[in-house]
Length: 148
Image (cartoon, rainbow, N blue to C red; front, side, top):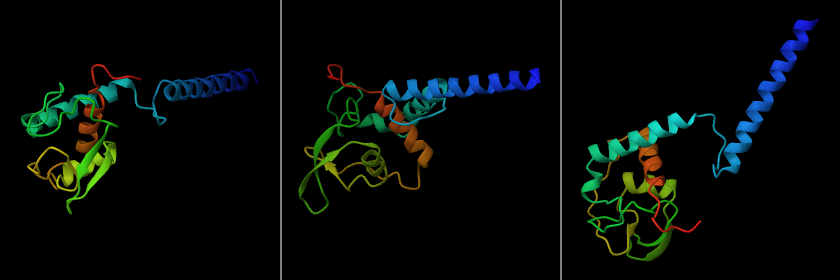
């Protein structure tokens, strides 16, 4: 009977520990619950940076705010900007995960105002996992004087 109580206490402690972990994850700015350890996120970010380098992204996109051929990636994530649609109309777009993925696969779909449609498509050249890694890297590139 003592063994059953011991296992119940251990199981309860494990459940409470998991709940505490998820609570801390969601209160520290994480929008979704995840059981990925921080090392996995670091590996994903590193992979995104390496992919961006290997794919030649840094030839056109800076990470320090400087304007090159394409928009800087510094502060890009969740930034709202004006874009030119294929029919020439101007619209607002927010650089969320969907926008960045679309820009990688179909760069001519929404051109940031002030830039030209020079980016090649990476459709069938990168996997969804690769795109998620690049997005994870872009998310780390905050503006230096960004307000919370």
